Length: 438
Image (cartoon, rainbow, N blue to C red; front, side):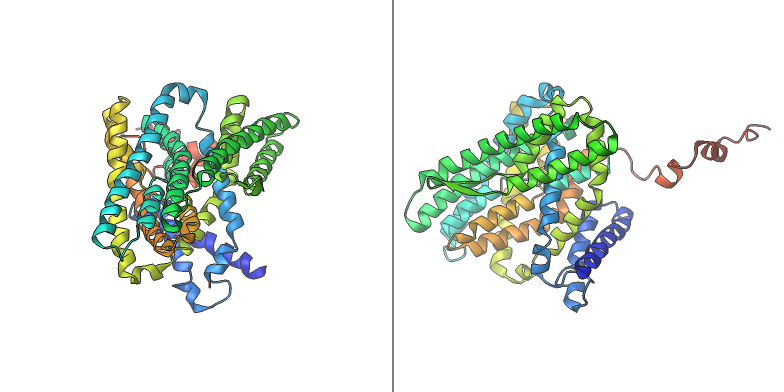
């Protein structure tokens, strides 16, 4: 336990220190956290074998999954808060159409490109792996996007639409992956399971939304018994932890495997809560402040989990580069086409696709499921390589797009040290009564 605590402290401080460097070169803080994770991981400082200084093995990082899952729960809960009725009236139809269409178009583009690659080089990539990778390509990482939005306090039409689209994208990606994985399994094993392809994925989405809705209503009901801000925040945190735990339950009924999507459950909890609780905005602000260290650890651990061995495999690199180029084209043009169809403003049409490039946890989870395929190891390695590239580059591209449309204010203008000084002292520094005398 003492080693784990020291390791977490080093990860937290290391991540924060790296942001000083990324700030100088104008990169988002999330990039600093990921790089810190790589440096503390099993290939750099972790390789020294010094207990507490970095993560010595991948098993050690996997043992901290409780932190990463908790962080994902809070991130999803926060994104659910964007689904306020006022937002939905403005962007609801656009977000649904764009969220579905760009995900489907991305899958189609990647499928076509990788199937052509399979036909040209059958030994490099199997057909089931190509189809599975196409579906995984639809997934967008909500965590990196949200962290960039929070860091720079981005606000405006593109930011609001982006958060809604990212949330919808996860539900669509889950359906696309389940259907594609079922088809890939059928090709690999010669048998089709209608239950696995159709029934189970739809059931997972419906049950996740129902559980999330119930938890959001229950949270609002219990909040009413507490009046102090600190106690209400504690109740909110407890409920997110409870929701994350419940969403991990899996069981079988009549031969049908039943499970939940952590992201969908927590998003729905946040959505219902923010629409029925009159003080939800203030509570969400307080919860966000509480979760800052958890979110930093999430990205540092994610960086440490990236397997650099994949960079030595030429097949992974080649298929990975093709996958990245095809997915990037699919996301950009998919968003562009769907924005034109829904008559979005030109700045949104030109920039939304770029902000949808980050990919991480959801895609890795899908790749883990795909490991049962005969060519599952290739799928996993390609997704790992893509995540490495997208997580290091994606947040910066998101930042640049939001700057381009004027939804990020110039950073570094204020300091918390100065800002939090007593007003009298702050006033005397800048408005001395004698300073105006000639």
